[in-house]
Amino acid sequence: MAYTLITANRNYSSWSLRPWLLMKALGIPFEDRLEPFTKPSNYDEFRAFSPTGQVPVLLDGETTVWDSLGIVLYLTDRHEGVWPTDPAARGFAQCATSEMHGGFSALRNDCTMNVGVRVKPRPMREALLRDVARVREIFEEGLTRFGGPWLAGDAFTVLDAFYAPVAWRIRTYGLDVGKGQAWVDHVIAHPAMQEWETAALAEAWREVGHEEDLLSCGAIIADYRKA
Image (tube, rainbow, N blue to C red):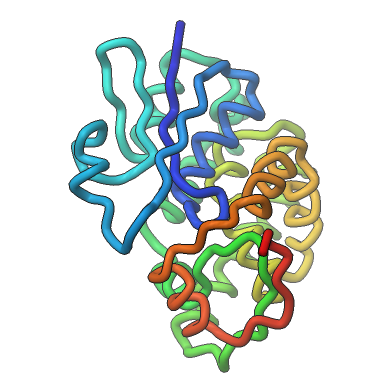
């Protein structure tokens, strides 16, 4: 089985991180193909390999699988460990994963992912405060109900992969997730997350739109990226 996973810049692409991290953590082999953002919209270029003009995309022979959740569902049919085995944990993971895939718009917009910086955020609007509070609830519920150290128990699953970009946001903007900070520290320490971070810090290229989004979120107080 020869997969190719197409992703974009490590510093910016939260959607790319999800299947990449899941496959790395579960030991699912794949060719890692990076198609970097080169301008505010790469739709036309990305359409050459993606029906939506977006990443991530998984190639499996002649089969093209797009969207992070679509990729996860495709892998579920072919590999063990994507979801928790315990029925209660599995149900929780399915709901929380779906919630992240379709929600948290304020968190996405007001705290854009940028791995290599630390930011003093602007005063949070009510929608962002609600999103952060809901993330804290999910983290604390998962850790309390299933015992940790992962969000659905003692094994890394898709639930952890889908919230991993949020871990970077929490660190970047200093967001308060209460007892959920234990999971944030744990997932950031994962070898695959460390590999992703190392690559993100090494990227010298900057995409203007992503950098402008970052500055609209707050003031940069530290930048660890390659100059």
